[in-house]
Length: 335
Image 1 (cartoon, rainbow, N blue to C red):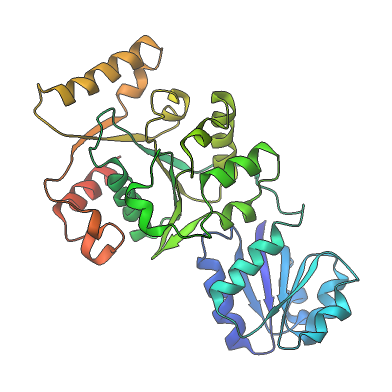
Image 2: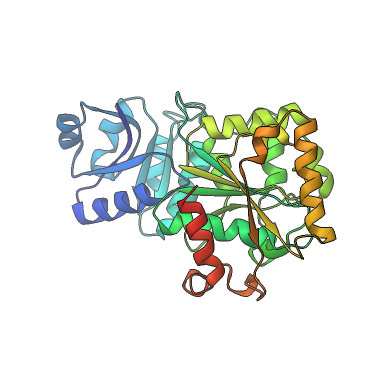
């Protein structure tokens, strides 16, 4: 059965535009369907499992009577006080604010409701890793480029960075930014759900990025077993079609997570017989000694570009002009 958010508004043009935006918003793992009235919804929704209502004042009473979470789109601040004492599954949002504000409000509301968990019954999410034992090889830029490729093909994707430093992500961080540190804390305390995960995702163009932890020591906030379980739970939630992992420096520590990957893109620099490339050979030997020889076949070496692409990494129109991006596209397509 299809899970949806029902958007009910007598102004069907408004309802259609809002439902279309919500259906394309990766941070909300439900589709939205527009209706002009609760009666219209009740006569058409028998094949759908509704998880929440977004409604206007004309239909709010019927929606509340269902016992499901209700978000009222209101232009009257006095309305909320009439309903807020009736159920904790109610909130009011100013109808004519920006759609991104509506999404943020929805995530905040959902995060307070236990009915919205971070688990589903199936897992179709594919994982692609970016890791190299070579330092300063353009790993983070490559992870963004791989993530950009998936987003450009209308595949919902999430990029998680386990880097020790912000590197190319520094331009996305501001004083209110949430990152991997916040997610690890919520997970450790058992309070992580899809809404709180969504609040920790930074958005730029069509990209969904979890910024690196604020402090290096936070990368060790979860034990190795907890880190593996964390990734399994993220994948089991099935919120995204693909997850791209920038492994940072934890690749040697997290071989179980490397093993989850369909393909691991390994940026390299230097001559084939140089010191840098020998590090890759040593890493492959380490995989074999630790019983993960099958990961070697998932490694896909890619030469880092001679020109610096970091200035264009968050501008897709410029990024796609680089030959490096064309190379990535061919490699991902063949993965």
